[in-house]
Length: 243
Ligand code: 6PG
Image (cartoon, rainbow, N blue to C red; front, side, top):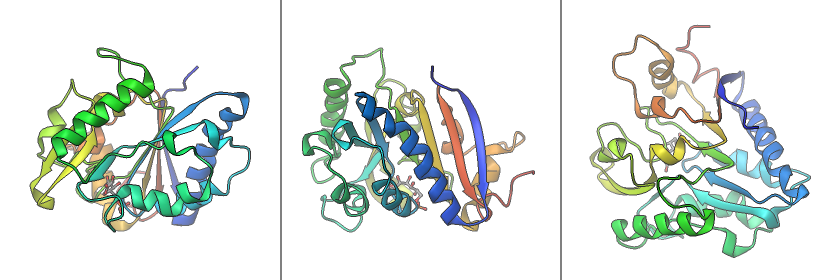
């Protein structure tokens, strides 16, 4: 039975946040030892790096049953310093034995529209689902930017309106670039979502997400999954919350 609901956990230091995230993820991934395939979507950015290193050190995971995807990707080659795939490879994938055919990166190096179409097909084939069903990740890792974006769902961009497609190429004027991103239908189907947010620079975004009177909710506020969502914050990021 998938748990539901929203939980906010605040940690004095970012290490506590990272360790808690690794514990939650390990709990999900340990189902692999009873023969269950687990599908996870990873986030980009810098916050997940320590979480990945800790997860790679976790016990009791049969990595041969883990299938890895991404929530978003930059339109760069996989060896680029900006690549979310490269960050995950260096901090997690090179440290655990996941069969290469179970690592499904978004191909940021090709035409973004083609890459989005290709990834949509990858999801259909590997989850074995067709619309109107939606691929349901067992675990979805997200971050949030100071502007309240999550994945590559940035304020004021077209991808925010997408309710049919699972993956889109999203032009992000504020980044002067194209991004690949999962859309809300997929993000909101996940069984467990962990949102890792650290630093005082994110405090206003977190306030806007949770303030019921906020008139201009940022994109991350609309991640309201069917399953459980746990926001893991450090004191800096949580500074704007009523507590
Ligand atoms: C990306 C991420 C993005 C990230 C936030 C926070 O591709 O950049 O998917 O949504 O989670 O920008 O990034 P930091 O963890 O670096 O603050």
